[in-house]
Image (tube, rainbow, N blue to C red; front, side, top):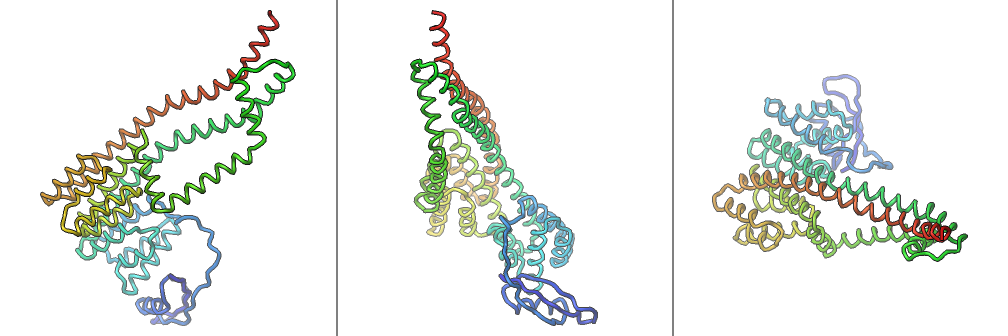
Length: 401
């Protein structure tokens, strides 16, 4: 995709107008101007400047609002081009406004809506584009857009639940770690100087804490470098297929978090596939899209195994059962859905059930983490305080004796 700046005069007469479009070739700009009944004066490719934008600048909420409004306009009988034009004008997000305008230009140049949206994969995912294509082909674009909005809302709610469950313990342990570092670097040396001046033998606990303080003060840079190196190494390992598979498998088998991630993965898989199948996307294409959006390599491989199984004339349920990731109840319900021809409805029921399971798992996780964090923090901070006061008690006893 390249940006082009154009100057053109309306065919009916008037002042020269200028504008900017993002398309593949100069011919597409000319085709767009012809559709707009404008006579091109000049068309040139815009030079690429320094782009400091991080991310897309468009949230899931922005896409949901756009999708719902788009569906309402199409259902009301407004033409596709007019609907996009109105949405571009009223969009409060400047990044989304620009994307909608580029989609509008592409549609006016003769491309399908799905093809135009497919040029912006960071905003419109494969799932989104394929469902729009199915809606265009079946003449039910408004219905498909409403399903998409509902799917995006529920999927975003699921992601927020998982993040919420991770943020609370993460913040607590981060603050606790910072408190321990401050104690070791600034507080413990004061006690160390006092004990050295008194010349008394130190208990093992006290000596251990003082040694930790001395090491951290001398080699704090090595500790920081080690943490950064560990993060980089893990990221490099995760970038490989085998490393990603190993780490994702470990995450799924963690004592408490693993169960939560497994339930969330099942909910995401069933809702995504159910939405695609009910929208008219073929089962093979639906499984491929679902695998890409799984967010876990173990789930991805299991879903792609099911796709290969179907391509070979077998069922979805077999490979899912063999993967060991999906609970037996899920596999059996999918199998029943396949046999009765109601796979999309069965997948939606499973997704609704596991959404509730995720809610319960998050509540259980937070309920279990709170006492665990209190105990861990109490042992660490309390242990350091006790270790520092043990020699003081010995000094008091020696004076009294």
